[in-house]
Image (cartoon, rainbow, N blue to C red; front, top):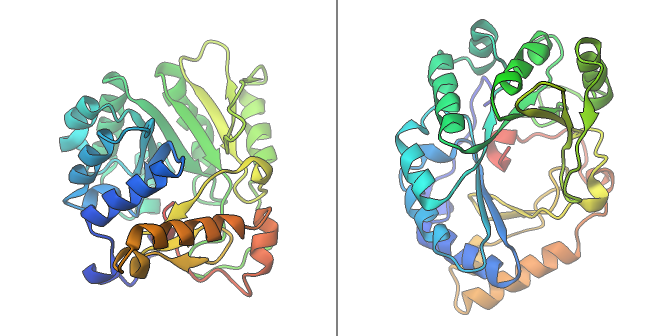
Length: 299
């Protein structure tokens, strides 16, 4: 969340839970078998569990995943387990309390850490997403690995991306995935690469003697573009085929019109058919600085 905040959308500009359920069913009918709920923070939406219950009953949907900051997930952990929703990405950019507070501007470290440990203990597939921010949290890169040393968790290090409300110019980054790996190799030179799914955005590794694993996501370098199969739909209906691309169209009007199912299908197929081949090609069409925040487009 940018320090100056963001302009929140009006409720009537957001999908309702019924609309999100219908949209999900349309996507699953078109062959989508994995849906990830992101944010902002998904659990600030008080009716989120209604959507998750609906998704858990959807034939053809093999994987329901959630990206969360783990601040308010506590009361829902038991039901998530009951629903079979076990794949969670936790956004956490520091493992030391002082750095965590400085980056998040919130004093919720203990809550987040306790929820992470509970999720791991309860058998959830937990992945920690840690964005390497030059001059802010890179001293925590190695200490964060202690989570993977003692727990069955994957700590994933992401390159910084140019989505911060346009308050900073990005020509290059200091901590790209190669430097992150070199930094880890200084401490653990005997790590080795694990096999990952072809469509994975992360390259994953194991350190001998560690219970868990770690990975790197080249989100700025974009080495995974050739195998990317993701489609992003924002809470306000924007269809985004690449994080570096502008929204190609909006589904809210289509969803609320007559013959909505066919119109939604048509819009989605058009967006996928016109997607850029790479993030670099997508970015060429995006004139100037990225003025939007990752908060508004889903992490």
